[in-house]
Image (cartoon, rainbow, N blue to C red):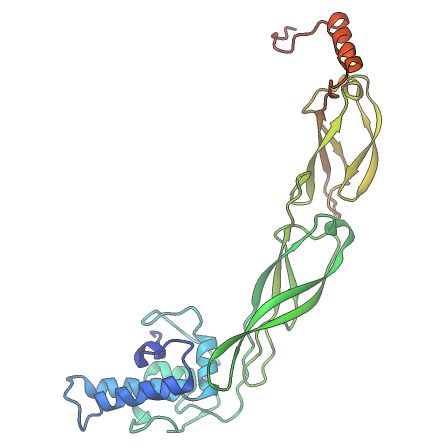
Length: 310
C-alpha cells in the first residue's frame, strides 16, 4: 500500500491552519466538482480532495495521520500496525459529496470503513531524542541537571507551535559518552488516552583540554619536571575524580604512558586512567637559572638528535 500525502493533495503546508485547509478544500471542490468541472480526471480528483479534507479537517483524525505518517512521502510503501484502525465506525462527516464506499485502501487501513473512533483506539506517543552535555567529572559523581526542550504542540486552530519545557533529570554515576539515558513518559503524548512515549537523552561530555575518553578508559597528560622524570619519585596528579598519588619511574622519557588501573569511569568493570608524561622545562628568565642550564650543558653533554645506538 502506498502512502497518501493529504497535505499535498490539498496543496497546503503541514503547519496550515484549519481556515487554510477549509479554503483549499473549497477552491479544489469548485475546480473538480463533477457537475461543473471540465477536467478529464475530475471525478477521481474530487474523491482524493474529499478524502484529504475528511482527515485534515478533523483534529482527531489529523493528529492520528500526522503521528502515524511521520517521515513518509507520497507513494512510498506504507503499512500501519496490524491492529491499527480496529474499532472504527463508518461516518460520512467531512466528506462533502463523496461516497465513503469509494474510500481508498489507504484511508480504510488508517481509519477503518468510516473514520469515527467508536472504541477510542489508543496509540502510544512517539519517543523523543535529545542531546545533553555534561562535565566529565559527572561520570564519577553523578548529577541532577535541568534539560530544556522545545516541544511541538497542536493548537486549537490546527497550527503546530513550539513550547519550552524544562525537566530535571538525574545523571547516574558511571555514564559514558554516547550512552542514551531513558526518561520514561516524557516523549510526545499518546493518542486517545494512550501512553506517552519516552525521552532518550544522548550523553556528550563537555570538551576538556586535559582529558579524553574511550569508552570507560580516560586518557590525559601529566606534566613533570626534568628531575622528576630523571630521578623518579612520588607526585600528586590531578584526575577527573580528584588528586591521586602516583609513582614516576626513574629515567622516564616524555611520552611514556602510565596506567592507573580502575581509575577510569566507574562501572563493572571500571575503566583505566592513562597519563602520558610531558616533561616541562623551567623557564630561563633569570641569570641564576641560565647559569644552572650552562652547568648542565658542561657536566651532562647530551645530544638528543644524535642517533642512539645499542
